[in-house]
Image: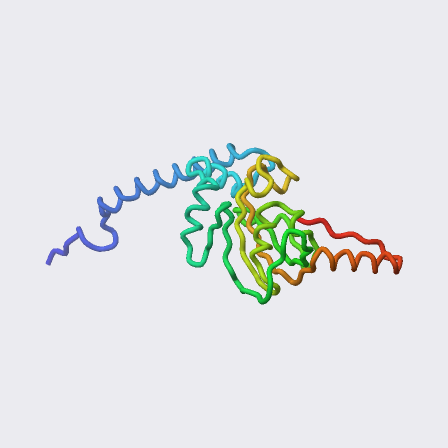
Length: 207
């Protein structure tokens, strides 16, 4: 009896051999691409930063106006006549401060990319003495209220850059809690009391 010799593990499969060639070619191209990418990365730049920069050049993020248009479509986001946007996290109770009042505020400020540029657990600030968008938001809030606010650049610092952490034309996002507020008359009375006790008066810098 003659056994077949064209079956079994020793028989070469032409299809399998031919499929290895595209695989090796793809692997070689992948290695070349990785090497080329590594050589293209500038000094002191991580691969992640390099890829992110390239991605943003190919697919730039929406501008502030587009971002606010889409953001305004979210549930519970309110857009005021000035262009300020806010969302009530917690309503609070009682009256709202006026532009002449002094508010005690907790806040965290972020840019659109999520980076935090400022934060404070408790700071006094003149309601009318901060950037327009922040001032408007405070006058909408009530004591104990918590808001998330989106401030267009024209209601913030506009084309000015107050520091390296805040580029020009930045849209600012704040989580704000209005802890308390006092009127101008109460603030003046408090100031006089402090001066009478020999305590220097003054308030912490506001955003």
